[in-house]
Structure formats: C-alpha cells, structure tokens
Image (cartoon, rainbow, N blue to C red; front, side):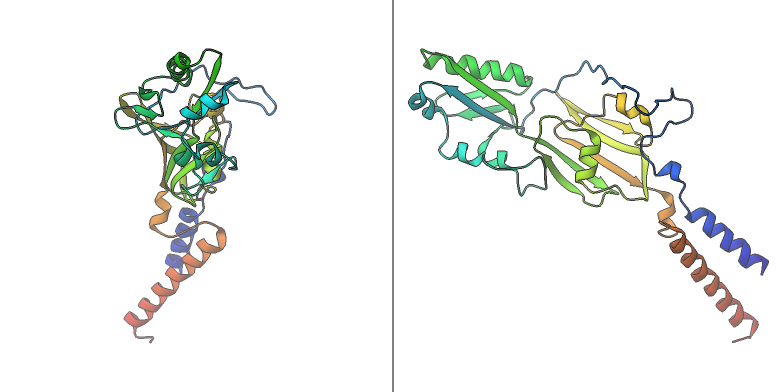
Length: 271
C-alpha cells in the first residue's frame, strides 16, 4: 500500500505543471520588475531589416500621367491588391505573392520597362529611392513611388496548435501577434525556450526567447521580422503523459496503479 501511495504521489507531482512555466510576461526573479501601467520604451536596435533574395515587395506608382503610368504595371496587378485582411494563415490569402514583385535568388526584381533592379541588401527606403530614380527618367512631371514589404512571412514549428508558414499582412507585428495567429502555444511547450531563427544579410542566427519574462517587451525580439522561424520545444513531462490538468494526471496515476495491482495479483496467485 505504501508503494502505491508513493507511486501515485510521484506521478501527480511530476505531471502537474506550475503556472510559472505557463504564464506569459512575468516579473522573473533577478530582473528589474516592470509594474502594470509602466511605460516600456521599445529596444534601441541598431539593425534595420534589409531585403533578401526571395522576399516579396509591393511596388506602386502615382502620377498625373496615368497613360504612361500603365506601362510600368503588369496587367491585373492592381486588381490583385484589392481585399485582404490583417493576417492570414498559410499561403491561401497571400495576395502579394500574385500582385507583388519577388526578388530572385540573386536579389533582383524584374519590372516592366525598368527591367531588372537589384534590391537585396537594401532597406525599404533605400529600395524605394532606387526605383524612384529609375522611373523618374521617363517622366517630365513628378512621379511618386511606394515600396513596402508584402507582408511578414514566418514559420512556426513544434508546440503550436498550428504549424507551418504564416503571413501577417502588416509592416510591423509583435511576437505575440505571430503566436496568436499560430494558435495559443501548447501548454506542454517550454515557453522559456522559444528558439527564434532569424535571417540576416548573408547568414542566419538562432536566438533563445523567454516568453515568461516581462523584459521581452523591451528586447529587440519583441517584433518579428520577415522569414523568422519560431520553434517551441516540448517539456520533458510529455514522456510520461499529457499532464495538462489534474484530472489527466489523476487518470494517469490510477492507470499505473491498476496495472501494478494486476501484476502483483498475478505474481501472488490472487488471480
């Protein structure tokens, strides 16, 4: 009987998950506490996103010479931009895939009349200025260029309710926007060990993010960037059962004890 109680207690203790491992944005011990209502300035990041091969950009023009302007747009591109929403899962609503301009493997975009322009390695503003300079040659009057990234594409892996490619049709989104679009992360996820795989010009880095830590709001990883990959690892508790709530843990414990009693009964000749 004592053995059974010990086993049951061990199962319940190991299967229950503390709220400290689940709750987002806590004031963790050792960090400067952030009070509710306190103003948190964004992190001063010395890195500005630059366009990369296979990015998609939305480029549009405005001028009083509408007849000439039509020569610089693919037929149907403007119509393809209509509609849309603030975000979309997967690629089903990736409107800019059809209406935007994709950078090729060498970082070039091909545009009507203007031909090939290399935009990789440039910020949005630098790329806009480059297109502006190229198209201004053909206009006597002013022409205005608008260039922006065609949404934020990222990928979720691991302990999310929905994994795979995602797109947020905004030019800025937080890491919690990305998580909520993928579905609330699984309760068995290691929220203190979110791996963020981020592409930089010429390479990739892996960063470890703690979603339990309120200091995340002031970190350079609070906002996601195009082509980010978010990977959540499972807790070790998955190895012995789901343990997502007390009833599941209790049911697991009862199953183990029943099996032990059955084996004991057979070995002692009771059955």
